[in-house]
Image (cartoon, rainbow, N blue to C red; front, side, top):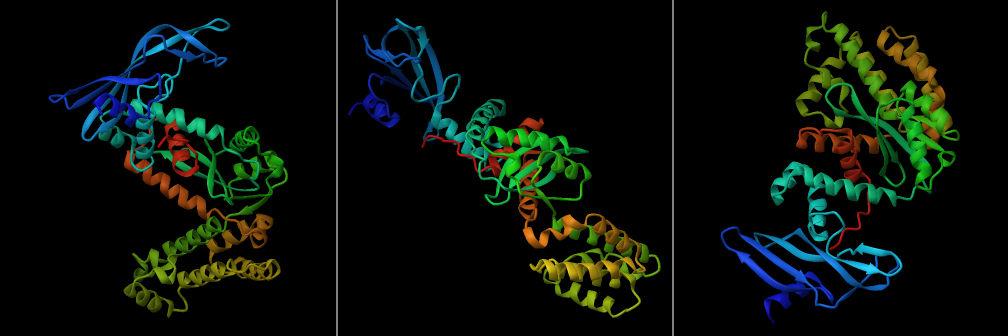
Length: 404
């Protein structure tokens, strides 16, 4: 078998396409495969599919997968056909999409790499500019998102994540059942819900079909959900509620540290779960808890009780215990704990809803961690568009339909 036939088979070419000659440049470590077609070949019209004669050709070059460690390029005269009904049209080639400088297999390699590493790193690895790689991402991600079906979305989690330094945020909407990112948009106001509702409708879903939404206590989020998810019941995320209690415990410690120097550098003793403490930390904590007059120790007991309440799945029992906790917290001599109690009372329905829905933003916390890790590796993204594209790529479970 001659090299031209071998490479034709390797590329999966079918008649009339064939490799008619191959050149290899040792100095440049470059392989060039020249694809052609026999004189008199006919190609399908891109409009009607009718076999038509060649009108003229234009030369094109595509970067292909490396041949061992050597760069490989495909060259071809791409014909334009003349259809009697639809006029002159350029045909599409089977190894590359229209307008791309890369073959489909090379783009598949790019999309595989950028899921695992920063785009700039992937660009350096394949010897191309990151700008060209972003063009590939900007083609495949929107195309894959257009095919996403949201008809069965009923429970969503909402949270914001930082896209850049400063007060620059992206709001994420996640399908809590399918554990996938549905929608991401700049900002963290009520309008993000309006945008999500429109995107949901465009993908076969319905805002009226959303029955549960998990979120933090953001007034903007509450307003957006009430206006644009009319049938959804709000569950205030228990992790955010726990964060409020933790902050209150730390505020008590900060206020007491001036009179109790032994509380210095003990912040995480009070905020971590016992199973996450080292032996020395456990011993230190037990020593501090012996002081019954220590306000921080009292606040810590409120924290432990609150955390235990949210392990109960019975609504009636949970409501009874939570009411008792609120009453004790409200009458305590710990102002930060008192403030948390009144905050929870003002959001009672959404707090209590957890005992029925059992939905939380735990998956969003994990997603946020993945995104921030990707952002840190990339040393930030230049635009919201790039950040959101990577969010969909990493978290959206998109079917990119890449060739193999």
